[in-house]
Length: 481
Image (cartoon, rainbow, N blue to C red; front, top):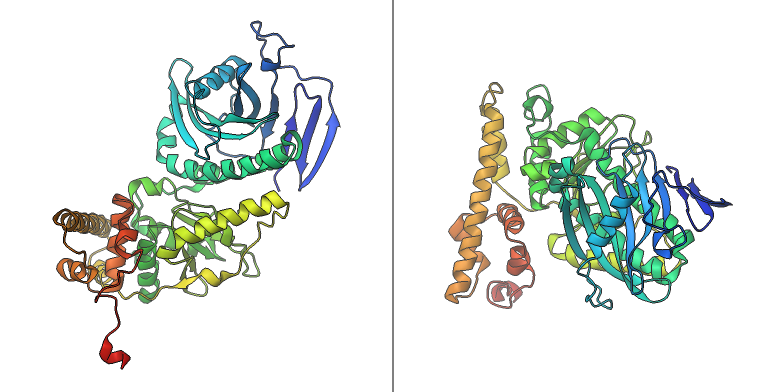
């Protein structure tokens, strides 16, 4: 495990976390690198603790802060995590950011469980601040708190591409942080746990900067190049399942080059924004499965084993396609219709274990894995057509882009069809939708419906979430008799 060292300014303690062992040593005082004459060292509002997050190779985040609203002192900075190797924001900027993220929240109901996302752009300070506002147990009572990131203004474009991914990770971190605040002495073990979660998040973002997929993928990196031959049935199953699971896939294998061929191939079937949240495998790096990445390559251990956390799979926003290169297996973490329920139950179980001190975080049985058994034709036709085209001059890449545009247009037609049926008051029949849109095969329909759900969230469960008790779903009486 990476080492995270923590220094406390006014609590006269320092914490170090190394290989899961935490030690506490005394320290007389901590002197800031900057002198702030406007604040007295004796004022409670001017004291905060400091940590360092090391071993992050590529990071566009300078620091993270935890602050809270004090009914007497107002906005109060509690803790700062500096990322090693990045510029350290001045103390004045830290206090200014604390006031900005908590301003306007004084009338908020602290007893609500909602987590609000606040984005602050401060051009004159040269920083942008994504902040997560929530209520948690403070030192004396429930208080309003915020966990915020300090990012240079020059990195705004990168953040916007990965904003949804960061929001998903921090929503889960905040949920666990609230349990820690209600259960533990946050200044000791609770702070160490939070630091380890933030370290994992920054390692995930660093992996995207290290071997993230480029905006334009060359054909020579993919399975559609003549030099990279892959069985067509296996490739067809991989692409079809990838599209059925909302372009979320993890590719595992012993050889990073074979893994990356499939990673880059699936990257062709991702939207531009999804490629910024995807990465290839890197030789010598045993990255774990990271929640909510779109496409990720992972290298197995020499014995063929891989520690794939089912809990992280189920806590993701969408189900995930699991691809084993050596075994030629394609599985799905859960069915699309059950994933929302399983994700909710898994998060509750995680919080319960954390509250009761069990903190297993281990792998659950793979009983939720689903085989890919939905017949389809659009991917079969696509692969056959691609191999008829010459591999030169970008013809095959253009054909795949045309396929993705046509798939989005078909999904848009599905959305408008359903909206028209709802407006007219007619009973929605999935069977009639399949016939009218030429999606009789279940795989074709589910691929199109998954794309439509990304464009209009909720339409998937609206059509298939609850089986309608009509003749469309009732069994055939002749078959029953």
